[in-house]
Length: 314
Image (cartoon, rainbow, N blue to C red; front, side, top):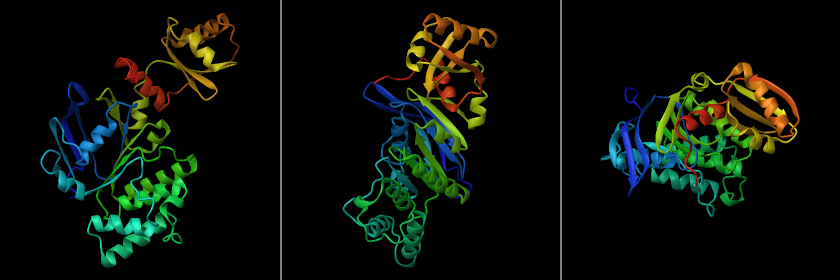
């Protein structure tokens, strides 16, 4: 298995009637890599994951997952991967132990191996003393880690995660990514979709999707280096109204809120700060600070989506 690329696709396409949800995707994932799949809602992330996990047949193109063909060997793919959806796929009316035993049975994990995997799951999810608790009684962060353990009960070489931290608090989210990093260091390939840009920093490489098409693929640092337009961080007395005042101003490419500040993309580094300051003063907004900053991954994504004509709305 070490000589097999965990995931490789060529011109992968999925249509629903006249609508093209995934449009000629081509990429490969390396063994032990944390591969991030990013994009706005409707970009095609979940549809792609369904094709790669054997849940949905492609319309066109080709691909192999764990060495098996996504068109003709979908049952084999399902047996050789782990999959965790954003709803965690647990049975709330079963206990922790019963959920583990159920998923283990689906993958033929029995006897001594089941005992070993159960011990690992309970330790990893910090549920050593909670085996007899109903899953519905668990805090969300514990449910998340239990779902991860159940997805890994058969020790698959590839783990697919579809927005796994949606609705989880920041502390639980950080703990979850620590676990993902540990799995990666142990040799597991992790394919994860997310819309949290800060989570993308944990990935070795990122694929950015928009309107079903791949618009960028590289490491987080290399993607940030692709941004050539200057970005200014602006602190003002009223961020929402400041965005309204700046949008549409010649020389200003984009303005978006980042917490209590704005990130403003301008055409020219030398004149950008004065342009922003004068525009906001004309709108009777107070400017407290303007500094040039390095682009965040969200800045990168916004810039690339803008270059592609914007994201799908609705």
